[in-house]
Structure formats: structure tokens, C-alpha cells
Length: 200
Image (cartoon, rainbow, N blue to C red; front, top):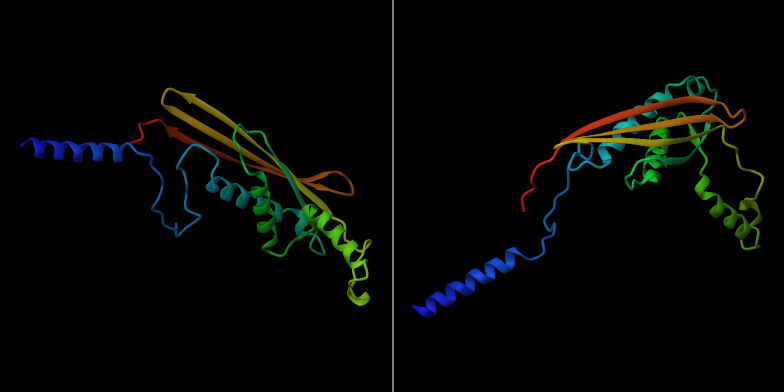
């Protein structure tokens, strides 16, 4: 009897220890629709980014400065200021802006981030290692017509168990020659959450 009781006690102890051990997300699957709404927590999400970028790009490409141009305007997409309290990858947002703007072929782009790489390649091609006919050099680049930059703001309000998170993504397109903002628009997003106990 004592032996059975001891064995049972050992089994219970093992079960308790295993249930108290560290937990990790170990079994996953691909989400078939990356555009489906993600409200897993109260942080900025890919759904927020997709919705905001889609609407703002639609507004920009329908503006007179782009639709009336005889050739695709050359655009430089630069920085997005993060004025929220969250750590948000603003480069990813602006990358999506650039990609979505380019889908219709209505604009062309120059890449500010690639300038140092381009300079190094010019120096290499001028080193004598590259055939003269294919060599590129300084002085042939095309200047941008417009710069697109912006700002992400947030307001968080909480009362008791209820919480709202408000985001406003604003983008501006500035004429590089005149310095005039020729297009500006914003997208507002407000999400509601209610605090509840999360199971183990």
C-alpha cells in the first residue's frame, strides 16, 4: 500500500513540475490570409499598416500632381516620424508606401538609402576593373520631383477595464523645386479593447 502511495505521489509531483515549467509557442501554422484583421493585442499591427497605407496611397495616386504629369514623376520616399510611445518599425511602413505607389507604374523612384552604395560602385567602376563601354559615373543620375515623408501619432485613453487606442498616419508630398506641399492626407484608426483575465 505504501509502495502504491509513493508511486502515485511521484506521478503527481512530475505532473505538477511539468505544468509549472516554462511555456513557449511551439506549434504554429501559416495564416492563409495575411490581410485578415489582426487585433491580438493593443499595439500597432500589420492590419493597421495595411489599412492606412492602402488608403493614403490611393489618395496620393489620384492627386492632380501625379495624374496630370506627362511622365511618371520621380519620387523619393524618406522618413516617417514616430510620435507614439510604441517601438514601431517606421521604415517598414514607408517601404510599403513605396511598393504600393509603384504598383500602378504612375511614379518612379530614387532611393536615398542606396546613395552610398552607388558612390562605392562608381569608384569601383572607375578603378580600371570595368570595361569602358559599360562603365557608369557621376553626373548621370536623375533628380527627384517630389519627396514623401510623414508622421505617426497616437492617443491612448483608458477608463477602468476599457481602453481605446487612436492612431493618425499623416503623409506629405513636397515639390522639390518649390518646397510647396502639393499633397497631404491622413488616415485615422481607432481600436477598442476590454481588459480580461488571460488563461495559462
